[in-house]
Amino acid sequence: MTNKIKIGILKETKTPPDRRVALPPKQVKILMEKFDNVEVVVQPSDIRCFKDEEYTKLGIILQEDISNCDLLIGVKETKIPTIIPNKTYIEFAHIAKKQPHNLPLIRAFTANKNTLIDYEYFTDKKGVRLVAFGHWAGIVGAYNALRALSIKEGLTALKPANQMHDYSELKAVLQTVKIPAKKFIVTGGGRVAGGAVEILTHIGASEVTTEDFLGKSFNTSVYCRLDPWHYAKHKKGNEFVWDNWVNNPMDFESTFLPYTKKADVMIACHYWDYRSPHFFTLEDMASPDFNISVIADVSCDIPGPIPSTIKASTIADPFYDFNPKTQKEEPAFSRKGNVTMMTIDNLPGELPRDASEFFGNLLIEKVLPHILCDDCEQVIERATILKNGILTKNYSYLQDFLDGRE
Image 1 (cartoon, one colour):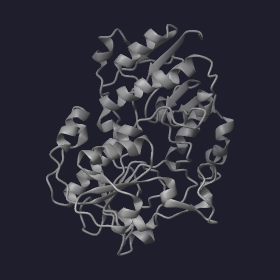
Image 2: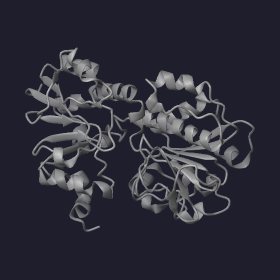
Image 3: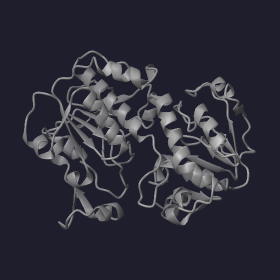
Image 4: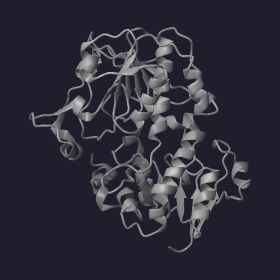
């Protein structure tokens, strides 16, 4: 067992605000009972889905000044002015894919000599992710796709998920949904896609094969879930090999275009490497046979493989239209030929209590033991982007990005 460690639970500072928390009250209590060398304090927050008094009722200390903590745990990116120098942060930093909008953040962490650990890269020895909000992102993303579709079709408007108490209420709402026969395409095969499929099954949509999706018509709603080998092929015609896809995605090209001609709704739940091929182009979207009218881009990579994902939308303003002819954004649901986009980048924040408890349990089970012990399986090492302000070996490829040379 290591020496005493003090953990500070950060209040979320990103704009727009996020109501989630990495460790809800019950999970904080469990953590301190499980590890007698751990002390946890919580920054007060008036936006967090769990009220301050829910922590204090369990004897958990609220503390505004967390500069005496060893480890600072948040959810979304830390607002730069709030960064405390020489501290270790764990958060979804959205830096490792060279996201341009977060270049100032990595530079700030570097300048402040911080250690930065990213949830997205906590993996086991086989490369399988250990913690994620992905299941909840898929659930809310697919639900928002249904919301957008209902508005476009002139159906009864669905209550926003963030106005519901929890997932149980959302499932009750789904029992009232009557969606006309539509074809849904879901990209990805992980937790995110699993959440999306869960929602589609709640409205009675049936899964079909890729062949049937492309070749048949249906009088009820159906969905097809695509793995990478369904939408990409090797440029030289080589057999699709998973390790090649993971390590050399630039050697592949998209084969997704046929699905754009048959699908009504795309729910994008894939993991995307910035070296991977794009699903389709702006020119493809302008084609008369591009049939997709709603895209719920749960992955929300900017810039990324879906060219109409030109910005992240918000929980308060979730939808916008993309005009394929002008290649410009227009108001949501403003023109029949537009593609309606949903690109919220913090979807689990719409069901924050369920998502936070799910995530907190995973942290305690799969990650925090490695931090609090000796990291013998290198779980923490694989997820550490910066060590005392210096890029680690695994993330040295970010140096040109950090220096502004690309």
